[in-house]
Image 1: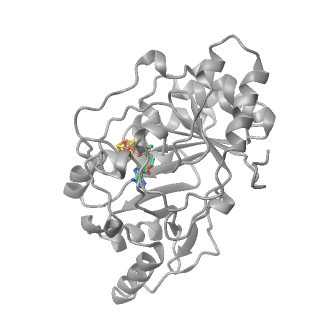
Image 2 (image 1 turned 120 degrees about the vertical axis):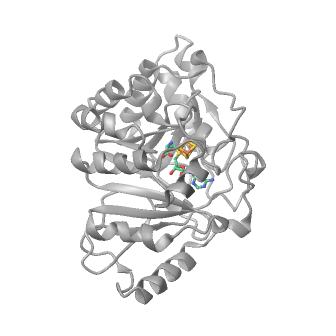
Length: 334
Ligand code: SAM
Ligand code: SF4
């Protein structure tokens, strides 16, 4: 499936819910969140049907995200159903990890291929301040559970916000003793005026990946563990735009994802499905295509396919440094 700029689109990110058990400062407001009504959210059957049609058109990989996808009832059955969909080769999950100790084994048994866990700090107090509701011990237990369940690769994603002054070297060092792929993501201006979630996104809070890598490299050398070199041994399988490095003799890698400082739009391979059934061609553009109405109209698969093609045709060439979107990350599906 090609878009109008010649890019092959084979990856669908599916937001299962806009709800979350945390309230990360860069993603959701602390209070007063207006969650979607149950009937506004696509049912699991509607998602399965959409994926079956999309797979027929060339989508081979899906990622479940949110909000927090593991708070959605029936997620394990959905994973199983998606894995059994002809044409779908991989089903991955992005989670804050809190529910993984309870769910990792059954997700693995259902056929989940990969897990990305979001964690921004190794300092328990800072974790509590960032997530507002989370327990650091539970999140770490989620990482352990993913490794114990046999997921590979396990990636740990950290959003870096300059004013938070995170200890990035300690974080990167997690990649040394265990097969963890630590990835640093540039803080993105998503959400109404990019500040409504209470974090007040500003350019001054973004650390460009190249600067961050130089910073970690320097701190690592000062700490006597040597610098970061381009990853060769354990480069994790994936479909994303990260650039990977590693410390000497490390079991994992350190990756950098640079949506702002190094646009990867020319390699973009994805469409997004919001929890309320909109196809969103680009994270940074509010142009959305309603597929829920068509799924519920009694129309045949051709009509659903038309919505996917319409979205594909409108996929922009680049996000052109747009700042702010109408919907926040938890609503779009990060
Ligand atoms: N709740 C799950 C989680 O936290 O992994 C899945 C949804 S969350 C919206 C997906 C990812 O988006 C997380 O890694 C989160 O850190 C990231 N994210 C949220 N807001 C962001 C922002 N403003 N800039 C960069 N990444 C952001
Ligand atoms: Fe929830 Fe994930 Fe957003 Fe944090 S980043 S509030 S865990 S959806």
